[in-house]
Amino acid sequence: MPGTLDLDAALQYVRAHRDRHLQELREFLGIASVSAISSHAGDVRQAAQWLKHRLLSAGFSTVRVEETGGHPVVVATNPGHPDRPTVLVYGHYDVQPVDPLPAWRHPPFEPAIVDGALYARGASDDKGQVFMHVIAAEAWLRTGNELPVNLIFLLEGEEEIGSPHLGNYIASRQDLLRADLAVISDTPMYAEGVPAICYGLRGLAALELTVAGPKQDLHSGIFGGTVANPAHALATLIASLHDADQRVAVAGFYDDVDLPTPAERHAFAQLPFDDTAYQDEVGVPELAGEPGFSPLERTWIRPTVEVNGLWSGFSGEGQKTIIPASAHAKLTCRLVPHQDPVRVLDLLEAHLRAHCPKGVALTIARGEGAPGTVTPIDHPAVRSAEQAIRAVYGRPAAFIRMGGSIPVVVTLHDVLAMPTLLLGFALPNENFHAPNEHFHLDNFHRGAETVVRLWSLLAGWKREEGSQ
Ligand SMILES: [Zn+2]
Image 1 (cartoon, rainbow, N blue to C red):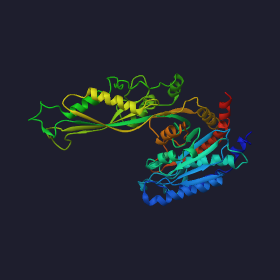
Image 2: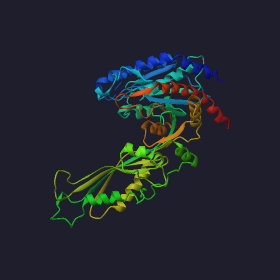
Image 3: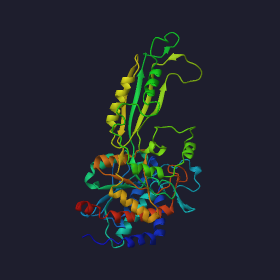
Image 4: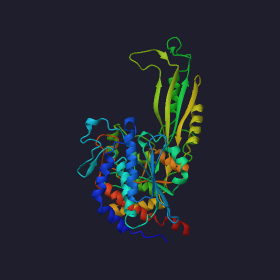
């Protein structure tokens, strides 16, 4: 049987060392690891080295700073225990640039505590949340315990510049990184006081249309009435994508879309959401979208087709009486889990070709695609996270999804077949990427305790599975 798992001792450790941990976090935040600016490349490396030393002092046996071709990744592991699940903790130690500097009330790399929140670039996105995981692991490793789960830390230095080297790195180190579950703390809670487990993300499929007409712009007086206008043809095509109810009118588009269970939809409906405040926030006269779904559902669980850009003809001052030679549009779809991006693009392409007016030539270029991902709500990790949050926050967690995509989640899913749990402790208004980024210390401390508990709840997961 595995060695001791004394949860109380681990929790006690987190509470007893709060001051030191906070001091260490301030030190970490003091390193200006801005990945986008080449003059900070040395700082990015310094942050990687800082993490390496800190993970070693937390009790990890092997910590490497590995080259990727860009900024390095930091990987920490311990000897695995075959009876226990393996969890990969992904996070990033790079930060966004700080501009505009004058808007900061405290210098971005001189952390300051104001009203219970720690202000610094990277406080919530993502150094504070990364360090929370370091503390949680240390709490197990430095109290005579074993780690309840086999932990692998994968911390990258290029998240804020789109992770250009991470996909290759993961593909090349599959043996090192293989795990039963990924946990990422790089997202906000649902709202202040409402801790959240995010278990689903939408995917993406992109294409670009070119509608070509005459070989050059034509005089609309001399030629108008005899040739098809590419701008009109493009407008017709775009209009054909939705029906009068704002449902996507592409045949087969909804074929593979799963509807969440009634229990999930009921849970979404219980979340605080103010349509009017949302409408004001985005600044529209009225909300729109597919009938039969709430605004949250439209962004979380329903796929969309959107025009992202549209251009043709003359748009300068005054009149220029032409028939434009061509018209262009960029489209993307947000996809929900089980929709295959390639199939969706096939369907869209067939639809567009079938609806293209006569007299023009349509060219379609396909762009990036990534599937949506979902971790089933009854997955042991989701249930354990809910229990851990309930124990620490004294209230149930919100089960949420997000409308966007997180590329590393797709990579972990595609390359390593790993489900992901997004367990974030930032608040939505903590100014990620903006001046005066901050992190509420209450959530920093409670987040660490939640993670300590989560690991102990997951300890028996594999044995339970084996005995079923
Ligand atoms: Zn982040």
